[in-house]
Amino acid sequence: MSRIARVFFISAVFSFVCPPLLAHHGAGIFDAETTVSLTGTVTDFQYVNPHVLVYITVTGVDGAETAWAGELTSPNRLSRMSGEVRWHKDVLKPGDEVTMTGHPTRNGSPAIDITRLVDANGVALIGGAR
Image 1 (cartoon, rainbow, N blue to C red):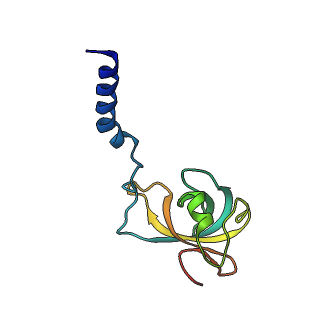
Image 2: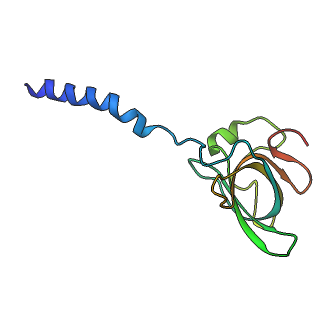
Image 3: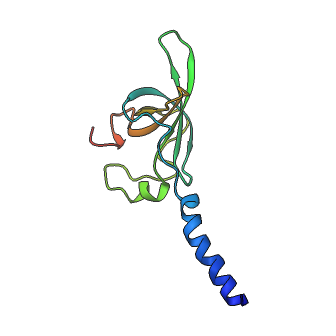
């Protein structure tokens, strides 16, 4: 087999085998049948690829604090969304009070796939009107 034929053959094999390996991960870790709403204080906001991350501390009725992580879509997609708030790297700051609503993880770890995020003034940063 010539060198060109080998390169073509290997390229053809990789074109069929690799796409599933390169596919984006699913949201299977989140329980789409359950929705939770959490109000807390932002501790960190990461406007990074592949997903924007919001970290908050939630104080329970017993006074215990729990650190929660929330996941959004990509920064590029958020910045192109139309709405009341223009998304950028400084839209949330540590100390901001927010309410995150979304789907929790199936394994019970403190993380959610955010479907709605509202600031302390009642402005929906994502997920619809006030």
